[in-house]
Image 1 (spheres, rainbow, N blue to C red):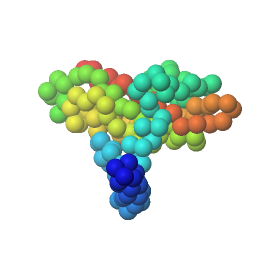
Image 2 (image 1 turned 135 degrees about the vertical axis):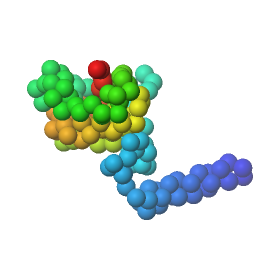
Image 3 (image 1 turned 120 degrees about the vertical axis):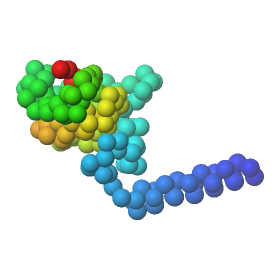
Length: 154
C-alpha cells in the first residue's frame, strides 16, 4: 500500500515536471547562468560527472580549423572590459556548453567566474563562434559537452 502511494506520487511529480517544462519560458539567451529545464536535462544526460556513465566518442567535437584556430578566434574577438582593466582584474573564466548534432553551441553557462563583466564577455565570444564539427559515435553526429577556459590577462 505504501509503495502504491509513492508510485502515484512519483507519477504526479513526473506529469507536473512535463507540464512545467512545456509552459515555462524557454532559455533566456542573455542570461549568464542558464538554468532552464531543457538545458538542465541535457546536461544531466550528456555531461556526466562520474565514470559510470562515461561516454566515448569516435570523434570529439572540434572548432573549425582545430585548437589553434579556436585560440586565435578568442584572441581576435576578446574585448577586455574597461572596468576590469582599471581594476586589474585578471584570471580564467570557464564556460561549459553543449554542441548539438548540427554543431551549434547551446546552453552555455559559466562554471568558474571571476567577475560578472568578464563572464558576460566570455558568453559574448561563445555566441559569436561559428558552428563546430559535432562529436560522432558509431558514425552518427551526437550532442556533446565541452568546457572552455577563457583567460583574461593584462
